[in-house]
Structure formats: C-alpha cells, structure tokens
Image (cartoon, rainbow, N blue to C red; front, side):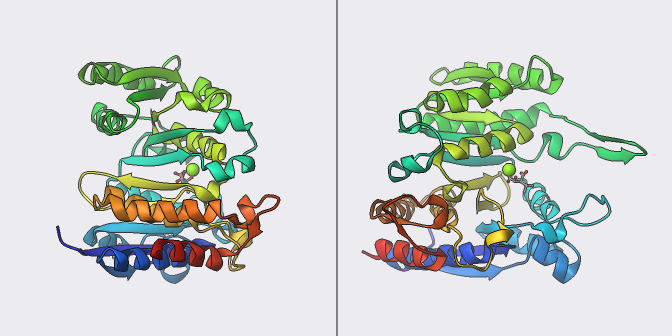
Length: 356
Ligand code: IPM
Ligand code: MG
C-alpha cells in the first residue's frame, strides 16, 4: 500500500474552520510519526460557498471530493443562510448533494462513553457507564430524498425505499456487528409505514444469512425510549435516514456532549467522508472556545475505515483519552475541578500526547 494520501478538506462555516485547523494539526503529527504523506486540497461547501459562488456545492468542490482518497468536513450552516423560501439556496443542500453525489449510503456514528466524562452526562452514571453503540444510518434515501413540493397551501415529502437500498445498508450493519458484539437492532415503524414493513421483511430475510448475529426489531418510538432507559442493550443500531438523524442526536447525549462524536459516511464508489456530528455553532464561532475533539476523532475514523490503518487511529484516540484523563476540558465538557482550555490549546495538548 502506498503511503501517500490525497485528502479533500471542507472547513465549512461557523466553528468548522477552527475545529478543522486542530484536526489537520493532529493529522500532520500522526502522519509524520507513522511516515505517511498527505496532500491536502481545500474546497468550499455550505454557506461559505453560497456567499462566494451562489451555490452550496460548486462543481469544483464535488470534483475535488471525487478525486481524492478521503474527505474531512468541519460543519456547515448558520442563521445567515436560514430561510423558508424554497427558491433560495441553503447550506444543507450542499451536504445532501455531497452525500448523494458521492453515493455515501451508510453513515456510521459511534457512541462511546468516555470514562472521564461520565459526570458531564445528564443521565445517571450507572446507566451510561460502558455504553458502546454504533448507529448505522441510511444516508441517501428515504424522506430526505423523496419527491417533495409546495402546492398552494399544501406541502408534502415522500418516504420511499427500494429493496436494494435497504439491503446494502443492512449488509453494512451486519458486517460491522461481526467485528463487535454481534447484535443488530433494526429500527423501523412497521406498525404504521409500508416502507418500514419492507425494511423489516428484508431484515428478517438477511438475518437468515447472518445466523451468528442476534437480530432484534424495534419500533422507532420504543427505541427512542430504550436509548435513555437502558442504552447498554445496544450494539449496532441500523435504521433509515430520518429515524437515524433523530436517534443519533439522542444517542450522542449519552456521552455528555455533541462535541465528542465523530462520524463516517461511506459508499461503494467514491471516497468516504468524515465529520463531527455537531453543527457549525455560529454563536461561538471565532472565539477559540469550540471543542475540536469530534473533528480530531474523525481523523482517527478516517485512518481506520478509509486507509485500514489501525495504529494511527489508536494513536489519536489514545491521545484524546490521555488529555481528558489529565483533566483538560473545553467549555462544553467543563466540570468542577477540571482545567478549562480553548480550541487551539486543546488541539496542542492532543498533538503533544500523540508525539510521545
Ligand atoms: C446530520 C445533520 C444533517 C442531517 C443536516 C445538517 C442536513 O443533522 O448530519 O445529522 O439532517 O442529516
Ligand atoms: Mg442530524
């Protein structure tokens, strides 16, 4: 395998550029430690691209993303571009266009509780200690991409799934479960929705081919409740686009902060995309207080999933653990007796742990 990689970086809006700066810093330290060579190409996507080109996903950005080996995204959006006018561009269209344009149908969102942060969660320590689950969300179909329109006083969105879309997503979930604790919760609303009944039929059928995996069907409303009641029951949680969007935000709060969680979006054809699951937090942008950890951990996911390099991934994850264990915190995860630092200093601390 070559040691040279082309990375496309989309800093985006709000705190995006700040957290990306720290992630690139960490990437460079790890790359030099492991003798890996990274060529970095930046592109504009989101609100910044609307301002510069009137288009949230310029062709050039999509082309750069397709041409590289992996993509790292900061965050996009902000009140500046908020509108309910269907004829005006929104930053989110850039992200959705990228997911579709790169056929990134599987979105992996690991939710792991950091021991040192148990006190930052709003839930009881005994409920969340040891939580380690993975949301596998369908990302290029369902309610997000069905026909939708305004017709006079009426508006509609359509929820459609083809069998192949469900099958390829569930295949990813079953495969990942094999490398974990061998349990898949398939989440649907089969008591009401036809598309969910198709989803469930396919899950049952595929379960037959994965006899070593325990398959549990759960209705989405029940799942939302179970995530709070007893999150330790979950290993892999496989679900559709909209349910996955909602459940993954809920699951993230088990860890105490959205600022800690990273995600990977992948398909079969184009490079995978890595991003923190938090948004662009425009209210705290440019103040050096944002938490860069989720973006730094996204770099670890990139090493693991795109380049099959576990050692650099572990070096980053270990450094984050060590810095947290030593008591360093950004404002969002601050608690009594800990030492508060800003975005840049958190990045520096993690880099110096990677170095040793
Ligand atoms: C996410 C976000 C996006 C989504 C938005 C920004 C379009 O909430 O990645 O979860 O809804 O998918
Ligand atoms: Mg979301």
